[in-house]
Length: 169
Image 1 (cartoon, rainbow, N blue to C red):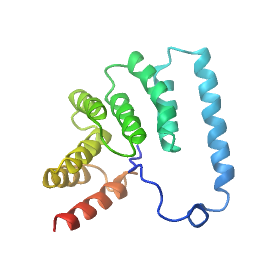
Image 2: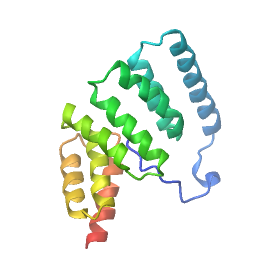
Image 3: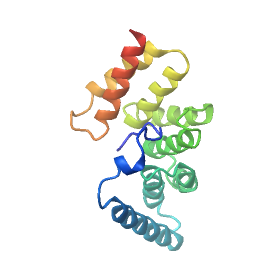
């Protein structure tokens, strides 16, 4: 699980892309294309569609993640991580804003699994966007404290906590 804020980098790409990253991205794109091709032959592979949607999200293509997540939702309607992934794709398409539609998918994810980290993160994002910063801060602190310190998304949550705490004074 990687939680990103869907914000464009502030530095130019030439200063942020490590050497060899173009080849790595090409390799990732090749793997994504192979997964998409396989799913054309295996249209009932719900986990495959979830992975395809997640892959598009992690490579900064939320619009492309919509269709695979929709298919995964049809095949795996009781999977919290599918609902939260679809919500994240919707938020990504909206430039990082948690829209009412995206929020409904995070709410569904939390009904299925109250500890689902992506849904909890974006629930906090929605609270912060709607003038409920203190509640968002409490939620993100609880999220950070309830997960392993080496969770791949901890740095993102910690940054959000610091940013919001400074804003709230």
